[in-house]
Amino acid sequence: MKEQIACNMRQFQDLRSLAAAVCIVCSCTNVLGVYTDDFHVTWGAPNNTKLVDGGEVMQLMLDNHTAAGFASNKMYLFGSIDMQIKLIPGDSAGVVTAYYFSSELTPSHDEVDFEFLGNVTSQPYILQTNIFANGVGGREQRIYLWFDPSADFHSYSLLWNEQQIVLSVDGIPIRRFANNEAVGMPYLRKQPMGIYASIWDGGTWATRGGLDKVDWGSSPFVAEFGRYKVDACEGGKGTMEEDGCPSGKWWNEAAYQELSYAKKGQLSWVRSSFLVYDYCTDSERYPVPPPECSIS
Ligand SMILES: *[C@@H]1O[C@H](CO)[C@@H](O)[C@H](O)[C@H]1NC(C)=O
Image 1 (cartoon, rainbow, N blue to C red):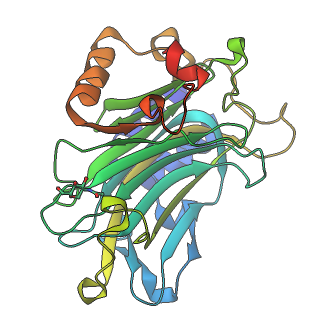
Image 2 (image 1 turned 180 degrees about the vertical axis):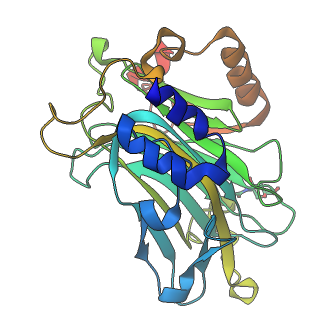
């Protein structure tokens, strides 16, 4: 009951501090977050990261000296993570704004990426996603978005449980990666992941395959990370037994183990209308499509 109240209260951002206090009772991590509590700067000079709007917005700035990044203080194992992002307006060619989840960087690390590939003024961004399981990536997909991601904040989400990983944009699924361990495919299930954001020069490849480089005359480039919500279990505390989620978390319920009929429809709308590239159909790169491609 207390947990229910705490979770309802989190709907109200002006009750944040109160909700944070109550959350200790339910030992979960699903408040609307406070940057200064949850993240630390990992990359850049002191003025390449800046908290504005009363601490609700973290700006990441790329200039011709330095890239920038931040990371969560904690690692998570399963749950739901939403982040509002507003991308660099105007000329952003060659600039990559990355929002991703990663376990410790070992040869067998797990990772889920949202990478926003900038463009020259008024040309569309590409959202590239990728998934590394047990150290193996190479699963790039690219889509255009159905809105201008630099005009407003939009929400970019990860739903992660034992059965599936779903990446969504404003609640619309853009990608699903299913647990196919039954047929020998590795799945992201054992390693907690942290939350990362960064902005950097990807001029050699990001925009039209590297044809449009970063125009430093347009710098500094600023991407904004706004409100976020982490409703996830904390991992990385110790042994696997100590990590992970108690049962009964909402994201383990049957409704979240696969996509609903409606969400399947949305995903196929995204794929038929906005897909630019899918590793599954890149026969030059993968003469034999990776096994997960033929399953889902
Ligand atoms: C940039 O715009 C060009 C021209 O419209 C388009 O072909 C390309 O896919 C866009 N995005 C990137 C990241 O190159």
